[in-house]
Amino acid sequence: MIKTHREAITGAQAAAYAMKQIEPDVVAAYPITPQTPIVEYFAKYVADGVVRTEMIPVESEHSAMSAVVGAAAAGARAMTATSANGLALMHEIVYIAASMRLPVVMPVVNRALSGPINIHCDHSDTMAERDSGWIQLFCEDSQEVYDLILMAVRLAEHEQVRLPVMVNQDGFIISHGVEPVELLPDDVVKKFVGELKPLYPLLDTEHPVTYGPLDLYDYYFEHKRQQIEAMKNVFKVFPSIIEEFYQISGRKYNFVEPYKIDDAQYVMVALGSTNGTIKYVVDKLREQGKKVGLLKIWMFRPFPKAEIQRLLTGRKAVVILDRSASFGAEAPLYEAIKSSLYDVASRPLLGSFVYGLGGRDINPELIEFAFEKAMKHELVTDQELYLGLRE
Amino acid sequence: MAELKKWTEIPIGGVITEPGTAKKYKTGTWRVKRPIYDRSKCIDCMMCWFYCPDQAIMQENSIMKGINYFYCKGCGICANVCPKSAIEMRPETEFVHEEE
Image (cartoon, rainbow over all chains, first blue to last red; front, side, top):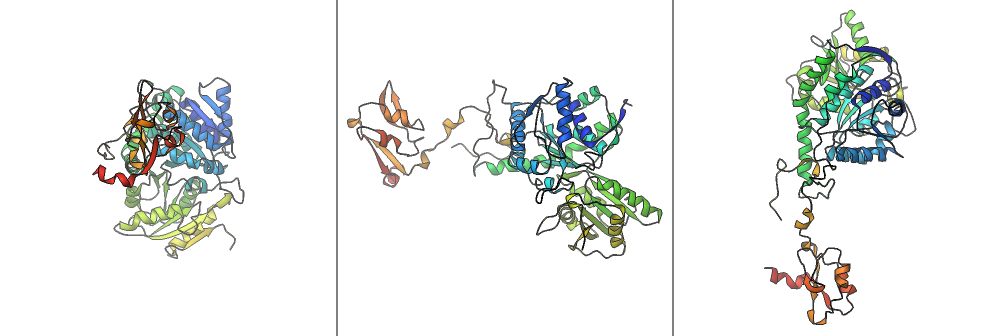
């Protein structure tokens, strides 16, 4: 077993530490709360000469993503990090990064989108990028932030994928909360992430290429079809990456994490740090003999439909927790789960709960309330309920 | 234009892996008006050649050799800058039968 060391660090530090070990060629970033400490810690590594990364302090997030796109097209391993309105400002180039098939990895510290202005956690920022063509991973804690950023590099750069990856962590809850994190030695990480094998690098002047030409009705559709296929390939490629990571870390990942689900009749599904609280509630309700369980979603895009179907068919009820709303339609995670369960053999009763908007606290009592609703069979499909809202 | 390829047959990301491919792109089909050149009025001043945004004016040793209709989009700049009115813009509809 590889010797790791354990440090008490925040999620932001875990992200910066992973970036230090990856040592990308280029990091272009603009500070925004609560992502700021990631950039701050990383800038210190650069200033101290710990990494040889070219750090570009830009004038906006739109420029940060643009610089990263340019660097990645040139053949560099490029990273950035952002939150909320910064991600929204990037949006145009976020879509372009995926369309140009550039393997950029970006930690996103989830924060509510304005307005009104709010700096605390919800998932409205990342959900606005749901269809941008990026792979979206969600972390429960700082350990997962560290681990998933390392795996994200491998996934993004895989020849059958070549897509950018967002590694989401909940603003303040993970990014500023101190937890023990197992860190791998630098050389082990360097070996695991390996060297980027650039595809069509602009700096290869022997083989000149054109990036971003006009692509009209004759070929644009074909390029989108390629992106759809690359997302499908994630399902083929990710298992070998997680297995390799397990070999060096002893920590096992997957598309989803089932928790006490084997005989569970009532299963909750959620993204991010709330899963930790749900596990606590599941343990408590299990002690009372209640057959409850949790299905944590690590990968939201591409959506692991087959896993969801396999693990949720035949349950009595499934409670889906969303930390963002979709105004005028179903909340994003609920919608994805409901759609996945359309053709399972035995459809469970479904419940949709929106919670935690703008950093509103989610506590064990609220989670227990949602489980109680399921256990009393009081759920009504498509009736969206709200946890922690004054009604 | 070359046969259109399937999504499995082209490089990803919309990258063009060969330099100078714009050369192969026929922009002549965009034309609504066609420049018609009258050699008898031309003084080879090369004004049309300087101004043409599409390199559609053909010349050899500074002698005007006519217009390349594969590239000419019919913008009419050449006709506009010609000091001898040696280029006239005529509607493409007049030439439909010639194409057939």
